[in-house]
Image (cartoon, rainbow, N blue to C red; front, side):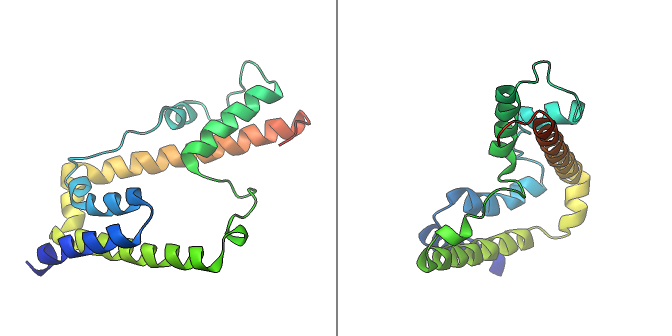
Length: 159
């Protein structure tokens, strides 16, 4: 019961402290995900990557490779070879982000505590299976992006 009372308070605190509402809303939606009531669809570019991570594009021109890599970057986020963005932000911006991350983490932990026997519930509702499908799609997307970057390098395309 304590968790249910703390959840609205944490939601308000996180809404005030975070600039990224998607992280806060994902944390609050954790119980719905655990019950397999709410699932974000897997992006089509990742589904396509699962079906053929090593398939060469029919048109292997630099522009085509760049657009496919960009589509994967938009879904997966920056790759390991991306220039670090941390150094360009000021100390105040990094502090605000760290504070909002702590608030969102508190919401996440509280929301996870709402459902008793969470692991079993996730297995019984199919949420665990869906999480594994999402993880496999993300892995395939990362493999596809690395493969396309390798093809781009052999074609001497600029990054």
